[in-house]
Image 1 (cartoon, rainbow, N blue to C red):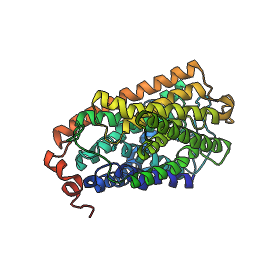
Image 2: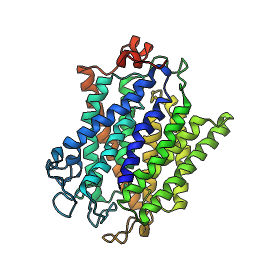
Image 3: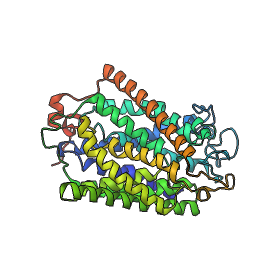
Image 4: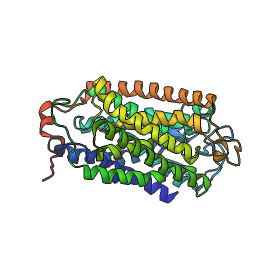
Length: 412
């Protein structure tokens, strides 16, 4: 679990930071790197102060309590009881009987809370004020991320009680971040020159390195969510690799057939989409179905990041919604169809979660709830910040680039 925690942290810094920085223009590279690094710092404190307590102490079905604010009373181990942070009930498909030091579980979940708002930054890249980003991310983490994490992963969360299966964050992390990113893109509006000027990536080498670090780190993300070195972790690792490979190949082939050339940006985007889609399913499906999930996701994410975005005219700069939102939705729904009961068995829950029409409907309900809550609260937060701090840099600042105008630095 210590190694998995470090791997997930690596997904944000340097993984996501380089992945996103490689896809913006040269004048915004440092500002994009700054977003991921600053959010790593800010979200660590937010999680320590209140996020962990709101997400994982028992509280009510809707929100956790305040008993772990500032990590007050954090003990050496988690036990069954009032503040059992992750020992879920026998009726939950996310059930686990593993017991690890609470400090490790808190840190593991902190890395999830760090990367989720960082993923959103891909949608508002190159045009959002740094101050607005900081304020939005803090309130979004407390009002959107923590409640949804509680609903899905807490012992008493109401979506967990319905039987929602989310092994490592398809709803909590990816749909959440993707929908918030879409709302950000719509509220902020398009970048200057969108659809008219060349907005090509500055350095795809950065993006490939970042995507590669994300891929490696994802083994901590998914296999680590088994909360132990066991067979379920091993299968989660295998399905993660297979789905990512399948989605990368699917995107590459569709792009090759459509445009005549397979691109570097395409194959890395497809692989990340596959990693996203397998996240809710990783500990619940067999390798064959993981490949199916990857292949389907590669095609669907290609369509959403190319045709859909241009059809509807929104500027999701780095495809936070097109890859994470859409990939998360596809993965969450397909988990309901392809879950294999015996694989997800634990001592407390020998039957596990099994693919069926009922499970598919449960997954669909969780997807809809996540979209509605995240979309509504994100919109309200953005409008409130726009009325106070202002959301967007000025046209002149955007033209000059955020590296100099926001941070007083530039790449030579």
